[in-house]
Image 1 (cartoon, rainbow, N blue to C red):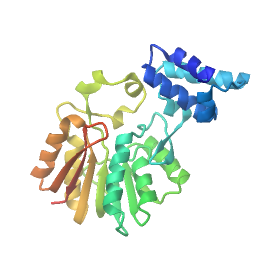
Image 2 (cartoon, helix red, strand yellow):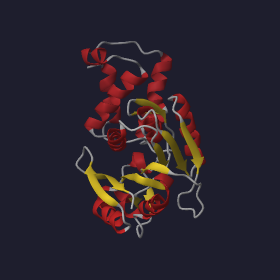
Image 3 (tube, rainbow, N blue to C red):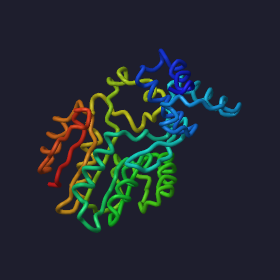
Length: 280
């Protein structure tokens, strides 16, 4: 193994698990310093310049403060696309890719599909859907101007045709829109779950996009479903990413609101994570 790989792992020992440190070491060396996987595992030595050494030490010092590597690098990958990320938006997760895959598989043969995404964040969901469902018309709302600015850059970076707007879904006054698909990965972590969270999430990712009150964990699901009753087309479908602890409750909420064919799916880790429902 490359000697710098071992150095990175040793530097992060005691802060990250062995598997996390290994993954970070490989990511840094292949992404930042452009080593090939063959060079990495062959232990091929390379002479780091003074500038490169300083860059590595800066990355390691930030990792030791639990800053996510995606924020340090300013980018990540989602559905095979590159996205800019910063502390103003959540880092896209593999589970969310599964939600996008579900929608794409359902609508791959459809044309001129109208999509509304609530909670733009980095723009990962609307951009990925626009790129993969090429005949779709995608609109995305977020309350955060910082998130929308990042999403606008990601829209341009990936050449995606989407419409972004600053909208508070909890507001009583919303833009007029009519859509076939309503999708959202809204805030869903309760305050009581805060103590169980990793520092690299809790200390760095935006609370606005993470938390809901303990006394109303389904706040956003209820509100978005209410809006969906009015804006979804007759055959319209609602898709959610959900808190794994509230799968049954979210299904029951949608059923009580008249939604049909409510389907709960687990993610790749075996957690209740996604819901699909047809409009009332």
